[in-house]
View (cartoon, rainbow, N blue to C red):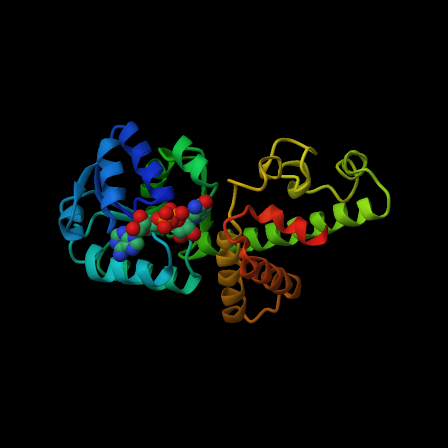
Length: 290
Ligand code: NAD
């Protein structure tokens, strides 16, 4: 299949390479020359004009920083230049409203389109083991599914347009909450005289058990290997967690719900980020309690 890929950064670079590995012809476009150079090395055909990159393709995949850029790329470039029967897949993490607006505009121009944000970081993008949460019509999902399968290990239909983004931000809000809760429990257990490994042995088989504890423990040397064992480098950056929490709070406003613990998690990550911890893994928030 001939696929245009727009946004070849940390995530998109690996994803586009996996499409090439799966036998697709990939037309790559990015504003960054370095990103285009890397894409060429991975077997993509590179373009300096986005309109040329999307001309004549059967599908367009985008992996861009935010909702305003996604709106602009689809409005200015993709819609009107890609063939109307091309299926469109936006894999960026953006606000639910922008996702729904862009899909409505694409559908009005005759396209099938999905929002398909991912769970998994740069390593999963390179390894082709991302999880995609997909919003859109049944037809759009069926068309997008084989393309997404070439870049991930799980592709789940979350319902109508925008529901992929909704699933992503609700999941990450919950992740932030149980990471902070886990960090607080370990810090308090230690100050009360418990050895962290002993607390892990007890809590990991008791009702406090959760993913942040047993798959991604914020305490170095406890549980399976995690960014805590690498001085909180790699993994999921605090700045990206904060981005998702801001999107979650924005969506909460439009949905007229007040997720109080989620809002508190956003405040705590905002302060942690502002203190210079934006590039550290989000589990480093435990260091605030030492
Ligand atoms: P990135 O900044 O590394 O890459 C974004 C790319 O988009 C850059 O190469 C940039 O030059 C390009 N770009 C920006 N504006 C453009 C435009 N108008 N036209 C063409 N290209 C343009 O970001 P990333 O880490 O790859 O993240 C991409 C998306 O994936 C974001 O929405 C992010 O929230 C999401 N995400 C990232 C991770 C992660 O671990 N990095 C994990 C899950 C989801």
